[in-house]
Image (cartoon, rainbow, N blue to C red; front, side, top):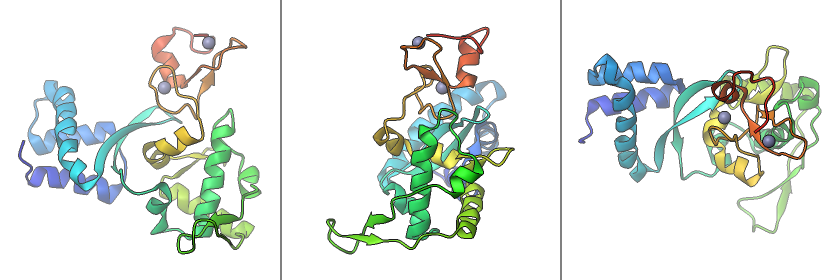
Length: 232
Ligand SMILES: [Zn+2]
Ligand SMILES: [Zn+2]
């Protein structure tokens, strides 16, 4: 497959708008490439497979992931090379990034996959990070964000889809985190969903006491008739 202006249009759209729902991505693909309605699904996956081989050269990848709050599938462009903080570094200060990291660590430990806004605002965080300029053994102390500054950055991170604000003001992870923080979830030893193999952050636990298995509720629905009562 040779790349042409249609491929360029596809990735430019994802880069400019951020992660988009899978249905919209497939519509865009169908329009750009004149795919027959019955063949969109299959052609789209072939397109991604081949296109990602080209993007590999630039350390980019079009990746699919699920918004764990409603089960909606998204696609987004992920930079495979950049370390996680580097993706945030252009828009956020080191103190804001340290706060975000502390939020991620706290959220993945919550069985509900979210923090109340009060807990999020009052979260304790390690105030030292390794300075990139100094030798790795040195660390610098970061200025602590005020409550107002934390409140502001919670809003900014939600607008950028790193975080997700629930209807009652709770703080959870947004689609950008689900797409881009896979290696972070692995380092934090977040259990995987038994059905889809993605990190089980907003997920149900097996009701058997000794069993550590977890499943997203939207995955359980595809597997069980009565997803509210399940063991596996
Ligand atoms: Zn799942
Ligand atoms: Zn089980």
